[in-house]
Image (cartoon, rainbow, N blue to C red; front, top):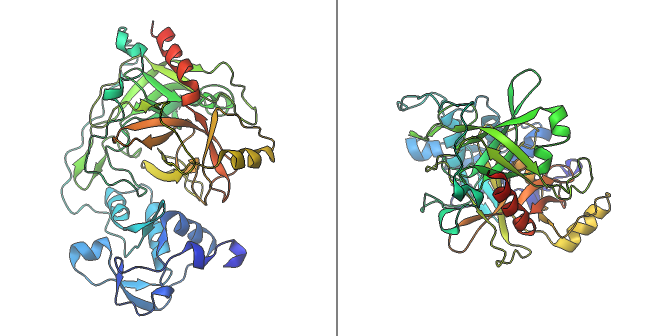
Length: 417
């Protein structure tokens, strides 16, 4: 295992009493995070080994059947489940329920046999997604000239939610936006993320609206709100369904004037996007608050990214994922990136730095978020770039929202005309 750069004694943990029973040699049994098992599955020929005990899995809890725990089998099962395309609702639910606690920010998981992809209950009838009125431009509304009020943003509509894990709930992070680009072939491609900051505006990265993305992908033309599973028009988990997503045409994009495409440190990598129509707020579509500049963002503070970003094997997730991580030491981060020719500024934030803990789990232009002590969520950063993807010791780099608050507010005010 050493030749692959993985240390079983450090990265993979034996199952605890909450996950297994009757195992005589728990040190032989692997209980690992989704990220770790994806990595292991990619580089190791996973073969069935001897049975070492019984495993408490979602299927066993629900059916009361006895499941045997095979060494090195859980990674194969969970990895195969996550890489299934299309990813059935039943498998998403299975993976969500397979978590067995946490080690720091990393969710631990134990997997038994995969559930049948056939639904065990009748799903609610599918409905057609909300139509897009491409030629309609909503009238001006004065309140759209400002970010959403502090008492009406960053609100989690589910007060009983347990934070953590990897798969989001249907209504979790309802401010997430998927940016759509019209390709040369006339198709829509969703490549970047963003956050809703009021009925008519979203915050994203400058490199998501101008530069190389226009040549490589296409022109930004649409924004999708209230999305969870990009495979379906209506998203359901465990017989609970969300409203159809909202697809809003983009009226204009406003990158920061200081951004220079191709500059290695991606300074001023922030942009505002205006829609032709106003978003309709619901349980699944809400604005996020912008960071309160009076609250300190200290090293080690808990922050989160979310989105439909790439997995460790390079494939995008069809469902919305999330990941918690700490703020990285600024000086150490700046020193690291200086070695590769990127001189970072005080307008950038570093977060993550552990294996698989960076913006690869989210999307370019998506948010770096923090939950305030009062439970309200705020956007503290914009996903900008990193050195590789999930490389151990290298944090991701995010544009600091606090440093651009005056520009954000002025851009919204001056363009809502």
